[in-house]
Image 1: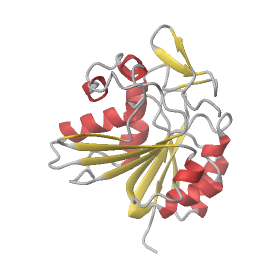
Image 2: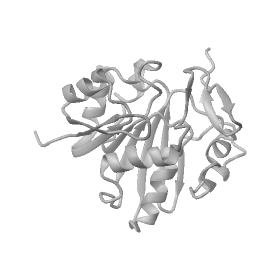
Image 3: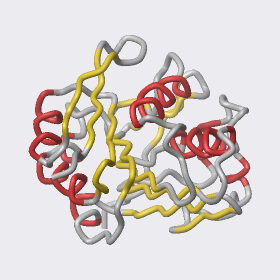
Image 4: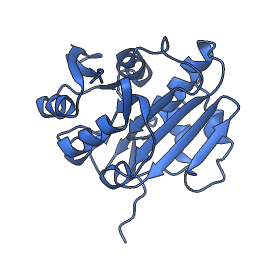
Length: 225
């Protein structure tokens, strides 16, 4: 059986790079600010937060998006719980997660450090104000059988040029089918085939200014039928 663990190299001692996809896990300029620009602002957050707000994500990676969202949820003073579901084919080892995000000390990294003795991520990590569900496996197989609906999607697979299977039209259709009416999606890529896939999935799609050297990104909203 193929090893499904993430294959890592560490650039400059701090930035994790996937050797499988030859792509860094986050922006080499400022991954935290990119996450805030693309995934939070791109989905109208934190203004939309409420108890039970459900974020779903393609590509858990280092957990940076989750930690950034949880911090924003707390800083916004939202009462109740944040629900976060992430689909990941190649999970990082549990002991690598704190190292990967330690360059962002303001984030609630202790969420991961508490289970540092676990070799792999557990399917559910929860706290008083969040539930993190991790679904391991190929999203093309696991998303169609998921019974959830997301208020917001983070589409954060590796570059479409290097990881095309996480961006194909069939998977975008499943994203659309698992989004509430009025729900949103955001991604750092503005690739035409990704935008077309989202449009075919029932989203109103908009190209927005990207972060840093990326000229454009994509946001989408599922309208009333």
